[in-house]
Image (cartoon, rainbow, N blue to C red; front, side):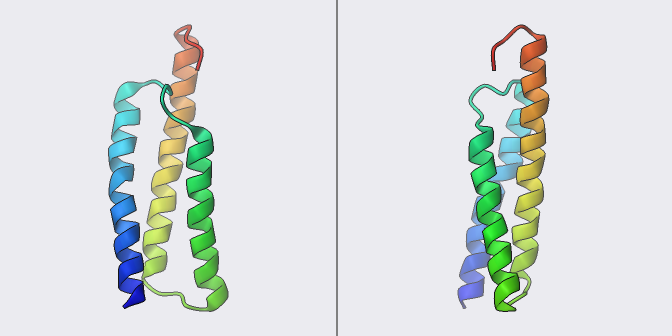
Length: 93
């Protein structure tokens, strides 16, 4: 039962990443984004993955951790793209 709730938590968090990615893509600006925040989110997901691997409790939940990592990395890539766009436009990001 705990894996179900862990999965639901990951799905709930995971729903926000496509929205954030879409906003980052459309905004073409890094303003309002924090790469440090994204880094801490990645660290948290990495700790969740490590906990699953160390405990030997590798289940379908690992897929949702991995999916969220990929989505956060995509948002982080857009952050760096948008920061370059900000600098090219004369903005201080």
